[in-house]
Length: 393
Image (spheres, helix red, strand yellow):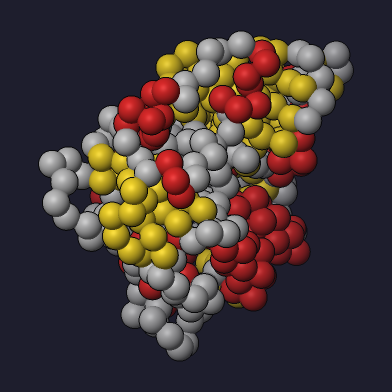
């Protein structure tokens, strides 16, 4: 019997290490490949990104498991497809999610292409999610299922994958709990058993985001305007179809809606719900960012974590930004359906309804949601299966 080849993305962490071990145990011909996604030889990030350490750990795991090991440099593509996208989005006053983009554009696109050059049938990663299959009317659909460990479920980060990508993907640790993964690593003597988890993309996790953004986005002074809670309450609209477009859009604050209480260094350095970095005192409760206006270079803030300006009943996703992982569930104009929805990683799933119109999808929640942010991804599920996703407008 010919063994199927699998390329495992070895990151130097415990999850991918155990994934590689489990694949070999199952009888696959496993090839370990490390991706260099970010190299910075100058500037503020030199000490923040430790891919050199990671590749050393990955190579030691490959030797321990007696599997071939290779390194592929995708940093040029990463800069163009992920980092440049980040700059563009922040410049527009939106907050992108680079982890979702990295999976869609790099790990399950370019890296997958490289894997096929090794003669592989599959690409495997250490993501905490599961893959399933279902046949409907003689057509096979691949299912993206949440990881068994609800505290580590990473299906949200894969919400932009398509059927072709899923057909070539394996997630060997998706059925395990994190403590079980570490225990397997200990039992097998893997050097990564006690290694700390990475904090997402290295330069986001280890460097202040404004410091990173200032490499391309200039700092410029602007006003911080406080919005009183009573003003927002007066503008609350009833939940009827005629109001969907307003309810599902960011509130259009104007400079005269509040009072100037300080200055900032650039509206594009801030995001909705942010608390740190305002450096304005004299208030009984902490200040939070309610909205940003990059055209006027204004930040609107409100006092207290329960300020009504932080909450919205719905959101909107334009047609061009809607993606269906399961295309057979796609909704067309005038159709609607209830889903479980999340608007950020690790947020509990919330009950909501997707209402399709010719211009896109309106998502209305049973409960108002805090910190809905343009540029982030909303993902919707049926039970534990991720059905689709889209970029919040």
